[in-house]
Length: 86
Image 1 (cartoon, rainbow, N blue to C red):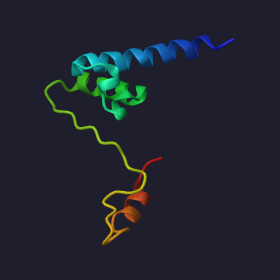
Image 2: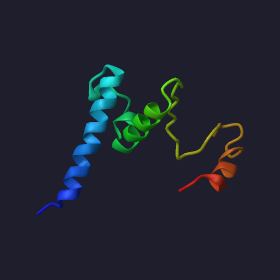
Image 3: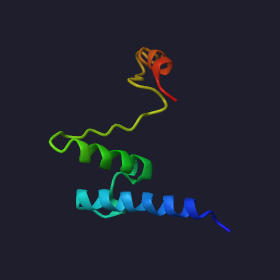
Image 4: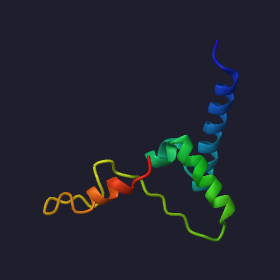
C-alpha cells in the first residue's frame, strides 16, 4: 500500500507545475523541461510570490561545467566545482 503522505506530496507538486504553466499561459508539455520539475516549480512560485516586482531568471546548471570551451576546457570548471553546493 502506498504511503498516504507521499501521495499527497506528489499531488501538491503536480499542482505547483500546473499553476506555473497557467502563469506562463502554456500547457505543461510546452513548458521548458527545467520548469516541469516539481521542485523547481515550487521554488519559482515561492520566489515570484515573495518578489512580485522583480523579474525572474532561471538557470539550469550544466553538470559538465560552466564556461567549458574547447580552447580552455577547465578554466572555470575547477573553481566552480570546488564552491558548488551539493
